[in-house]
Image (tube, rainbow, N blue to C red; front, side, top):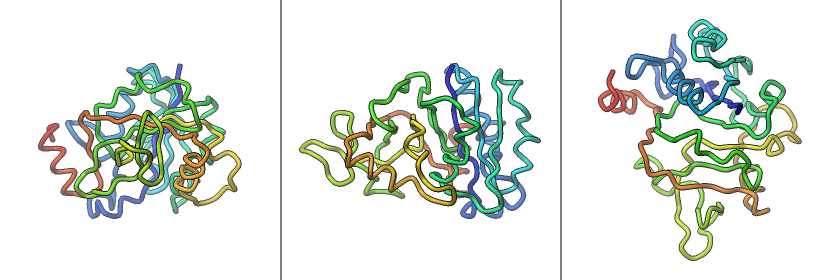
Length: 225
């Protein structure tokens, strides 16, 4: 049995006015909330314990998802307060609820056909990230990938610059020694890269970021409203 963290604490500012009264992960695509598609896919990959971190309109999540029993999973909620703690701070706060190590992490505001069951159960380093070809809104990518290892700059000959697809497998040590509060994961990634402890894979399947009304409309046109 695997555990997972779904990142759902963002304010959804670029998605306004749709997110004035509905958290972005609860916006519907193909007849159900974005986050439910992740829960169903995680359950199909034998993930039975899921933590959802929340902030903006947090009360809507338990109303919509309950305890997860309808999908055969157990859902617990990590409330971060009215101001989200960023990815790093949110992950650190959720660690006591997550329990297991390592664990899958996925952002609620993407849509993809990544096979969660195929992700490594034991990453070689502190994290293993799913990388995607650079989308038009992020043409320069995030990290370079060569032979399964990620690099911060160009990397060795033959390395390819790619964008982090917001899906990964993490060990708790990537954040567990940080001070509680609001912080990003990027400094932890760079530290892991310097130590040769950040791995990755290229994913060429369907992947979309869902950050704006236009991106949501495009996805709905593809997947169904």
